[in-house]
Image 1 (cartoon, rainbow, N blue to C red):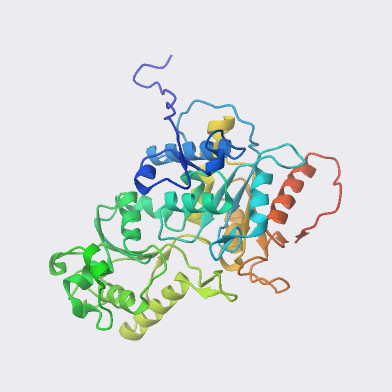
Image 2: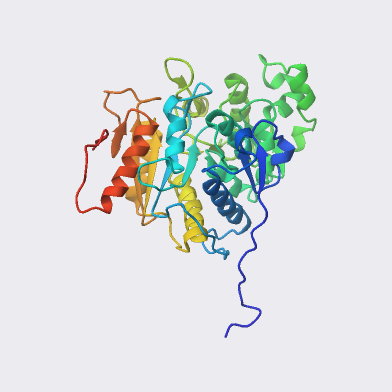
Length: 431
């Protein structure tokens, strides 16, 4: 019989708050666990409620127990299948130019039980988009798709960076609008967060062609950077000022121990540089793709070599990096354990994306890596970066015109696994 000192008691589930997607504020969302709800579903939970709550609780437990695999919790009753799940990119799959792709709303309804199979299917969102907290992303997507969602369902490119907060003290955070990335980093637990605006405020000659606006100056923090050592650089979101941000990053990379105003003779004493993703292009409201963070990374590496003659080593998170997919699998494993008492991720995870170089490549490489013993199945849609009829650089397991057809394909594939033979003709081309 186990002694009282070694007994492990199930974790008590904290109460979950339901917030309106139209009235919730940053302060409301600062303490979880929460679910964001369209006004029409505030009086009674919708079909999406169960998945949103269960994954939010799983994420809450992962955040509070570092092991990520053995948190004891009280099992809950569920009507959601545990055998498979979906993971979605957002831009170009569900949303384009800030507006929902027409089939996305129907796809969410299908996953939440409005289908011929009488099943609900869990889902999460993996996006390389950054510069906002998972809570803000959740609020925005709930408004766009008119569906109940929780912050726990979101994994942004910079989400895994939260695990580095204890490793570094003073850090430079680059990208995004205004102070948002600083707030994201501080929310992750980074203790001393610096922005390019802080550095320009201390020395306006740092960037000869960029001057702070009155609003930027108001929010930038005053300090003497001659006495500060910056231990790491994190690009959380797309830069709004390539010239200024690259100048500051290069100054630090070539510095002695991250102290601005110094130069290392070896050019190898500067802080490490991390990017939240490596997408060179992405799908926006413009008819053609727009350049993204991966282009900034390539530019910095080229400039560093031109100035120093040395290769620059950088690290990227997000897709296609395996760490991002492993983070997602850990979340789904925790969810399945809490809802189905099975300590493994769903047998199959269908990843739906629009970018072969990140979505499809990352899914395929994670599936082939055997890091986890479940299947990650890639589906490429033609509603974003990928152009229908062209040959993708990385081959998906299946292609679909849009996210609704992708969901139908996966659900039919799972249904036919339980039958002695397939029935009907698929509308999807499977490689």
